[in-house]
Length: 215
Image 1 (spheres, rainbow, N blue to C red):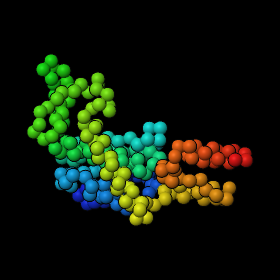
Image 2: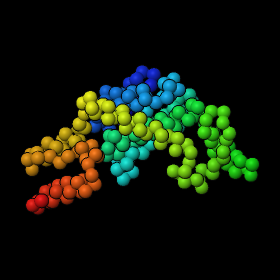
Image 3: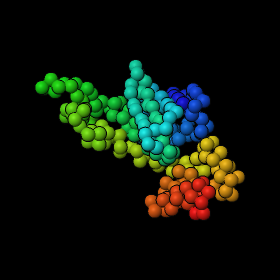
Image 4: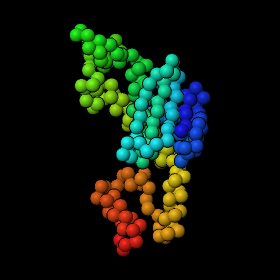
């Protein structure tokens, strides 16, 4: 797990369970995302932790909460670094609506507990039942989704500058592939922009190769 502290602009190495990328890469990625986010976030006490784990079926898991005066974001990366960047930006979107005071908990006129949401600061509030409102219909999630593009743009910028390193596990896997097969399977990042049919073709090729069959 890494912990990023906005006050020092550093990712602090906490445990050795999650060490595929050097802290300097996470620092550069988070800074690039924050530079694209609205200015109120640049003044908050922010900590971002990337935690060891497999995510949800290869997808990233993220959460934002406030402890005292500190905004804390937890992200369990999935298989794609671009996806991780998007998830970080999404959770930063939650931090932003908290800073702007757009969401608060409370009871409606019937005494039911839920969440009040306003589309803009000082705007009218609308009450939502948290349990009965589908995730993609919750306005605070829709708000956070708007900022996912900043994570993707930040990743693409670093990639274009040659600043996205190969992970240690990918390097090891490629080395094993080269030794055993004379070629290496593409990484998830390399597959990300290919058409689904091409990805399926590559997957089947390597599946056959690793089973010792002629592709």
